[in-house]
Image (cartoon, rainbow, N blue to C red):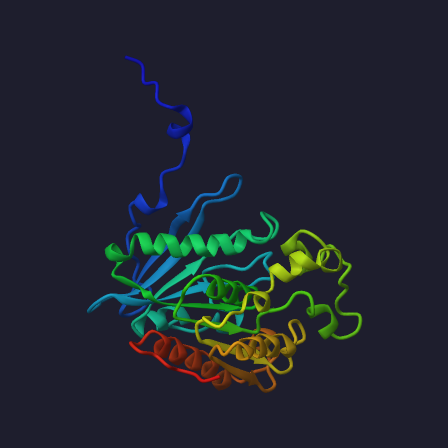
Length: 303
């Protein structure tokens, strides 16, 4: 008998939540790494993958950090936390796993592949994949913190404001695309430029699509039930001005949400210009915040 299945169903990729997990690597003491795990398939683009960092030994369901990389929504890689920490050994993800977290560092569609809200949809799908496999992987998804840097901080904030999470860490992220041009130095940003990073994200120049720019801005989604936020932003950031962090902080405080805003003196974008010990303090503060957010009856910060 010929094999005559429904062709569309036959050719469709398998559901990611049912695929076998890859074998674990052990890149650092006390750490397991499941690298390149597919979490979603999107028509016309590469499979979307995440790297899952886990403690080698666990004693109960793990709190989760969902990490979103930077790169202006045009590039970047899930394999590193930020350029400033490329030389760390163990690297930041391994350190988080050693501290008792599961860390999912997530791919998302770049602006050359799809426009907003595709990137947020992908981050939400990664959460769905983690939820579907939580029992298998030993994850406590009720204790999940979003964390991102630069463009990834923008996406982490959007995710935390549109999905119930335990907390959010943002490093030097854009928070209001409609005000960003006016906050940059004169001549540094043209709101009518259709080729800016932000224009490519929303599919039009900011000046031509203010409604789309507003929808893509975390400040537009702030609400009283937002989780606690830790907002770290360099005072000398030449790419995303400090005013963007101030705006998100003000919006959260206005609705009574909890936020810890820490301007980092002397820091440019990506923590450029910081001494090593200062950069390490930014990381340690973020780990401490994530730990406080994922403890029972957490109350880590105050308005």
